[in-house]
Length: 280
Length: 258
Image 1: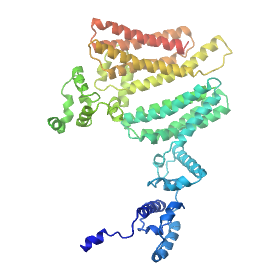
Image 2 (image 1 turned 90 degrees about the horizontal axis):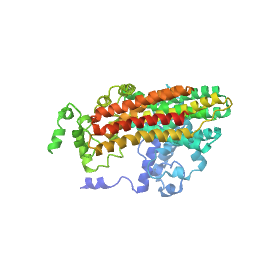
Image 3 (image 1 turned 60 degrees about the vertical axis):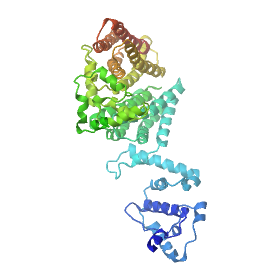
Image 4 (image 1 turned 60 degrees about the horizontal axis):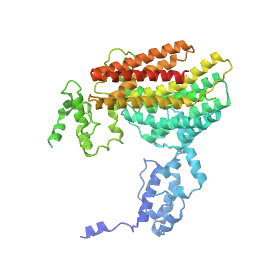
């Protein structure tokens, strides 16, 4: 009986907020120190919150004096021990926090949010459009997908095309936007229908990022008006876009159906390239 | 319980292969269960499909897995069907499709054709104008894209549906997916035609489009005849199919390559 009684006594005074804090701190620590490090269980009161926010700090009970020295040691060891997180690590530490709305991003300045999103766009761009065969984690761009980048690129391409058009500007923008947005959705559906394994939003994100070379091509064509130069630039941009999109699309389907999955991608980029050349 | 014990046998994959010929009546009996699941080509678990269909016919409409059966083709199969659509003689397209009609051909052939018509239509218009008037400058008319999309998608979606309902009403067997498949592949001949129509010689353009239109119409008519059975009552249908395809060819010439 005493055994069962001791089983039900919690080892420490539990209230829901401290449990949440403990779990959150464990997640943050595991993210900061990498998956190989197993951290000892901590008293919730000794862990500092990731950033100062009023309602968490007010609920933490004052640390008992016994563990204050150990808490100091732990505080000092946390910044020194883990390896420096990768540049995207800042965003992933917030993304990994899945318990309720993360108070860090709600109360941070808007500039921080914008900078973080811009940084994610740049890093995804580097991973998708400049694929490095020796990079350590080929699937990183797939996991950190976002839709801001594709949105910017599609709108930029539509604006560039409608800027260069002399008549029916709004119709040109509408055609370009509809072609790219609906095209990305339809291409993803095509892969899924052919029995491939791809996640819908990851694929949308990748196809949007692969538009970046065509954006650059459209910008150059806007500035330079020679037809032959346009054709050459657009062909180069097209080849680069297709080369960037090829590994993701071809690995998603059965090898017998690789051409069936890739042909529509080529068709879409070809039609966008033709629009860039033809709009004057 | 009896049914499920049949399906759970390890030889359940043989169940669909007993009849040698794909029969329309048996397909209609499968269709009575709500459509969408055919015993002849089930590779997945058939029991789940039947239970699902009997519960709620609309459950499968919004899930992709109920449409993957129409895209169950490999690259060489698609290329084979494409090449066979270039030769109008021999109305054996429906036999070639067999139990595996695909909508991949319909969707991507029509989309390619829309792009080709818009692109080459603009180029050809510019070239013809340049021959008559040296001072014309290149202008890209985006309206060609809209017209091409409406025309080609509308034709390839509506005409097979119309024929399907008409033939069902008149009592003969018809399958909408096969009609869509056949009409989709029949449009593939217009893709190289659009490329050839760039030649700015008017008489040559008319010859090219008439040859292509005739080939496409013959393809449609011969296959339809061999599929339906070719009785006298349905001769009007065949003539209508022929004329519709020719009308599409002439519309392409007149609108995009004036």
